Image 1 (cartoon, helix red, strand yellow):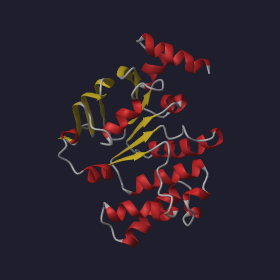
Image 2 (tube, one colour):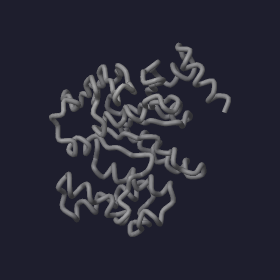
Image 3 (cartoon, helix red, strand yellow):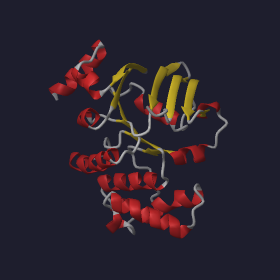
Length: 246
């Protein structure tokens, strides 16, 4: 078995007296698709923001290739080029075209020349079905199109691990499928992904590891079969019974 890309050890996060994450432990290996599920407010997005260094953990370690990135002694921009993130609200640059949104990180962070960056951007925009829109501005796109551009932008940085923070939650129902289809293809190609999601079918069918969180702790984790067909914890059973009812 290959060594983990990422290990989260005893991670905690507090905002003042409000403890949002408590003693979180899990690991991600190359090619894993790990889905983090749980009710709103369980700490899932905060966990992802800590992993991407958008929040500073209060305690614990985030080990990326044997280096504790939570120590405060890493170049955050360089680290984020290896551990990319796709946000629920897209976070595209509204003043830039689709193509330039996918070029700017490559030239600023990876120091690629413009031509190489453009070639890579076009390749990934084609991959997510957005090549016809390279000259459009974000305001001219649907939510699903914006999210596909955001995925292409993250892929253009050629990350080792891609984080998705509820990538379909801001989308109209008819646009959810087009984004999930892109993610399914990435998973099939072996992209290592850590996905916070309310899409239980994706977690069950596409993931190879599922983490269930409640009240800032990991209640249970295992294979999709373990979690969806044979959950051991009462909180997991209650959460999934509500999903099955829907």
